[in-house]
Length: 86
Image (cartoon, rainbow, N blue to C red):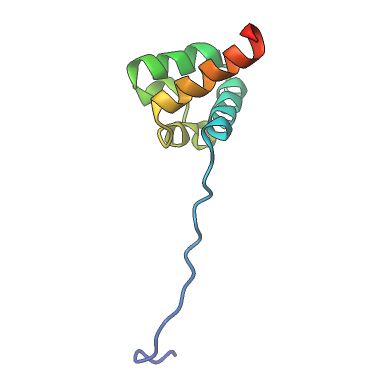
């Protein structure tokens, strides 16, 4: 039995910090795995802010809410400009 007067130690596991690009990739994968059209679902989420457009499979719903919708849109638009327009 441990003494209650001694200091107890525990380690807190730090949450992995993901970039917006990693978040979108993981959400896309989860939506695809569940058979959804990922483009339609992500657009629905960006336009409405309603997280139910995103499946909870593999934690995708909670993951996408960690990124600001403006940052997601900025990433997608920048990628479009870099790959299509340049």
